Length: 231
Image 1 (cartoon, rainbow, N blue to C red):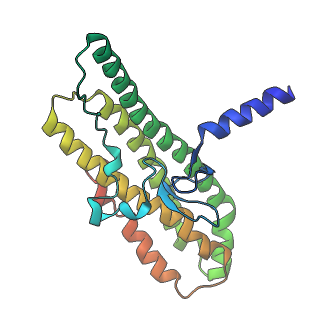
Image 2: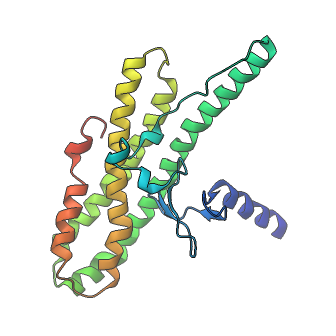
């Protein structure tokens, strides 16, 4: 039983870990957002999905989530029928892996967001209310944001199933869909990081004069108009 449990734990770790693109040490994803920071002394910041530097994921470089798109490898110099079939099968598997990984990652992030929501409702809101000197009713925007994150992760998860079955010949439709999907994922990632990481400063500290500023930034991050086409 012990060996079986250890084996199961190891399989779980391998399924939820990736090597840091810079130092190659295994990193386990234990938060919902895709912005990963390697442990010291490396501290390399990268995207969990595409493993590229996080600094490459902004408007400057064509949008946060260009890595939501799948691009098949070009077949060059493949003339033999057997080799061609092998390449087609390889591309088919890579395409499936691309969409399934993003489906599964959003599902995992949704489950983590649900756990964070429950903890927020049962523990943190009351503590924050006492420290900030505000009634819990004035902090309900935090709970509403977590509910939005949970729902958006659910919707975004299924956009990858839709994208997988979207005919490749419909180039215009696919381009427009991937643009909307990328915009939605960018806005959701901004909100999830704001709720998951930046909020911790205010949950663990004492009364803060900056809390109103954080509230304004938080409300901007969860503006549903930015993602109205998908969410």
